[in-house]
Length: 455
Image (tube, rainbow, N blue to C red; front, side, top):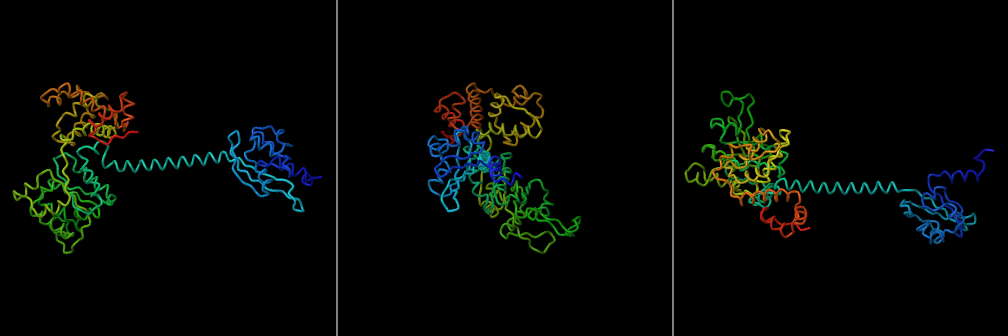
């Protein structure tokens, strides 16, 4: 006789080899059958379950609760997730069993171990939460990219505040400041923070283009407009900038006759190529910069007053580096890291060298500081660059640094550097082994009275 012709054998085969845990009780709650894996799942020997009452086992905490017991109590299907004593999670469905006359004769439950699924679900949730946190951090970093931690509360704070306000406004901006203070950096920042960031940023040094070529470079020309003109003509800077940003550096060097034409462009928002007859709409944003006093130039009749008021819708004065020495420390580290990446090196300045660098006037501002650091990174034979590495440069200061100034410079350098890594008074105090009140005072003294985070 075939195995599958014997119903009881067939049923027993199914019960013993089912992927799911199968549990059967009679109408009084006596356990008639449970799979062999029950002991592994619930931590109770099978012989202590079979022929025992399900309600008693539930009271003993073997099942908490029992799906079969719930079915017998309610005469309805029951599904729930249960955690066993061994930490496994099961999804259990219980069903009432009836005879042919509809009388309840027992209950059966089917259980499936979902521990791994729950673990994967939890991991996915943790990954999703981590991704959310990372995205939030990325957004914060994007905001901070325009105003690094060491500048947010220094003398550049007002400048960066205005940058954030005007970035998306279609207004002309005038940047004033000494050579090397970073006017082009501010212009690039305004562009990157604006909706125009995916469009071109065209930088034009008005003092570097010969007067005879300036008009054709600025406005472009048609083919055959003059001897040597390219066939088909050429776009000027206004056209090339498209809907992006045109940065006119050293605007004070613009010749008077071109000042008139620039004024016309700003008023009419259009240009005409040399040799052309069609007006072309100007859609770019204009940022101008100068290291001269345009007000003085107006008095000397070297700069048009009407143009000045056209470009001076929003003016930002960038202070020289000597007026914001608290920013030199982090600038040194930032530029050093930049140069190390650029030249695939791993060099650093000693604290004494950093202290000395911070005391210099840097008449060439950030540009001079950057050039000096780049030179030292390239030429130094050792990875650690100290005062003795450049005796010639050291002679440019005519007086020795007083001891108190040196000690304060060293302390400032250390506090600023550590605060970058541990940006709260509590963390900083714990790391340096000082009280929180002392950490607060150091932060207020050396980090420009920033808002101190207490955690």
